[in-house]
Amino acid sequence: MTDTTRRGFGILAAAALVSRSSFGQTRNHDAIITRNIPSTGEEMPAVGLGTAYVYDRDIEQTRGAAAQVIDALVASGGRLIDTGSTYGDAEIVLGNAITNANLRDKLFLATKLESSNAGELKRSLTRLKTKNVDLLQFHNVNNPRQSLSQFRDWKTQGICRYIGITSTFPGDYAAIETVLRREKPDFVQIGYSINDRQAERRILPLAAEMRAGLLTAQPLGGGRLFRAVRGQQIPDWAKDFASSWAQFFLKYLLADQRVTAVIPGTSNSAHMADNLGAMRGRLPDADERKRMVALVESL
Image (cartoon, rainbow, N blue to C red; front, side, top):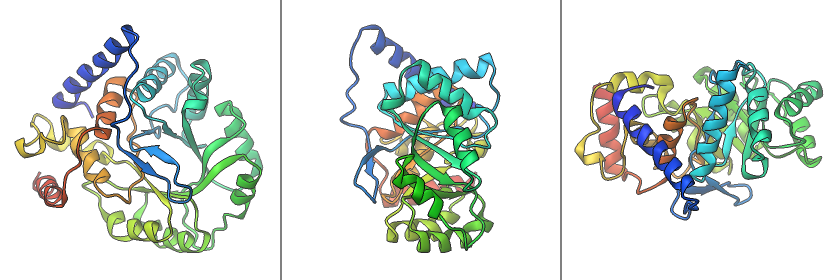
């Protein structure tokens, strides 16, 4: 995710954040794109931060990057940070960064567990330095008989406000569909990008039917999209709604109203600012989305 177009725009966006901060101005967040969480109507900024494979080592470099990225997220009106118990040291790094900056109340914090084990939950909360999270997800659901009863109990106890299920593996989609229908979680998180649209055909319609919020993991195609467009400019017809390739790719997803939020991962504050730019301006219409898909498929 280091193509020239993305890097250049990201640096400018980050500089703009610093400039506004330096003059003590308050950013106007009224124009950002938000979505309502279906089960409650709570408003959610449509771009957040994913942390898989990004903050997995608790070292000085990673801690510094996390602090800068979270600052960029909040400065542009973002709230959602998604992490997981198996993401190396990510919960530790994020917990320290959030606590040190006193930002917990400004964030919608989500994590994932691999089981219904209370010990795993306690470990995550301790690492995140919080008594509760906003969203607690059962990670990598691949058993169609998976129960969320313990997660619902934790929700009742106030340990989380929402519960969800996740998978980025298409082979798990049948199990995800079954559990989504039976357990009716508040959220489902799935792998979804303009170059991987299997979830568009299977999971998005069912999530809407079940009134589940939908989070999109790997919305930038795991770096494959940026490699495909390296050295190329976004097409002229897209410049009315996107200022960079990152915004082009993210706005394709956000143009579907069933998507609650996209959660691209990054350890670069300039890239975070660039990603957050997808929350502003208009979204592509149906015909433009078709052109976007055709362009990507031609690469």
